[in-house]
Amino acid sequence: MDLLIKAARIIDESHDFVGDVYIQNGLIKEIGTSIEKNVQVINGEGLTLMPSFIDTHVHFREPGFTYKEDIETGSRAALKGGFTFVNLMANTNPICSSKEVLDYVYKKNEEVGLIDLHQCLSITKDFDGESITHLNNFQGNLVVKAISDDGKGVMDSKVMLDAMGIAKNNNWVVISHAENHEFSNIDMRLAENLMTLRDVELAKYSKAKLHMAHISTKEAMKCVIDGKKEGANVTAEVTPHHISLNTEISNYRVNPPIREEEDRKYLIKAIKDGYVDVIGTDHAPHSKEDKEKGAPGMVGLETAFSVCYTTLVKENEISLKTLSKLMSANPCELFGINKGRISPGYDGDLVLVDLNSKNKINSNNFASKSNNTPFDGMEYFGEVVMTIKAGKIAYRK
Image (cartoon, rainbow, N blue to C red; front, side, top):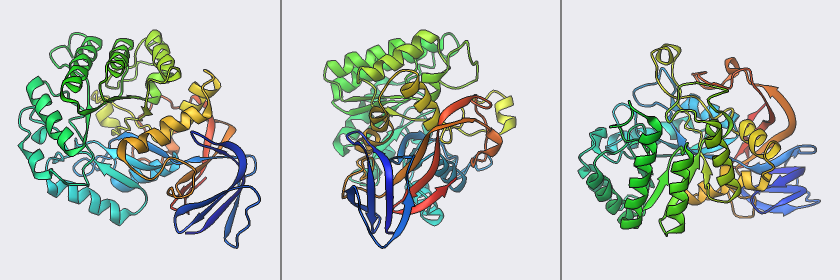
């Protein structure tokens, strides 16, 4: 599709100017000022144009739990939040340990045709914590970019090390859910910190790419920072809820839990210091009944930008260019995709946002099937008014 966006404030990790962007055949063809083309024109005056957002950590629940979410409703929630690419976790039913499940997800996404995605393989077969022989079936498979048992920690250290060896040979990312289950019922902080330490040490030893998901404690973040300084190939992910909420504001059940104010502040300091690589929502839809039974998790795609913009840019004076790097450029680099920057040759996946718009979050208006969120009724600045996918308007407020 061909499209021209005029007179918007253009922001990515390296740009900040008022100008125009021309998209031809789904790719960014030209950026500048006073561009004139005989194509569909969008007036971006008073709005900010950014690369679309990329979510490193999402649960779409298909196959197996489509009463919570499915690929179509999850994709619509993504577009409403400004996302055009998501990375799906493997805790489906059946668990994504086989080519059949992997093929199903990609075929279904192709039929839905709304966004791009990557489906993680499980580290251990069917999350059994022991067997990694299924990974041999995918050696050399270029579709696979990451493996994860997210939702559980891989308890056996030798199994994790062996998986890292396979991942390194295939240039896969190992995504760690840092939780030592021996301590989950004793102290969730200890459970996260101990597993973070182990996985960073294994990454240093194996030289594998390690991605630490949803870091929530100051000790875990310090461990990752130390690992980076010592040469570990490790990337750090934080969630919108862990950087914006603390136990005084919310006791909403998520895993890892909402932490103390000193943890929240330390995560923001780590962002300022350049140690956090990406923001991932951990979008985890649940039915009302499942939440009442204690299921941990929250939806996050439709609130992520406004929560992050308000918390980081408006309240903590972090630049919008840095936020774009965390939500777009860096995630694209992690998954090797041609999005995340507003430059010629990149995918024409963009988002128009109104930074001055202040809105009260109403979960009844979510595009997701689920509305489990602690942000319901809270007010935040920054609203997605349009999401553009490959030069086509995919969502308009």
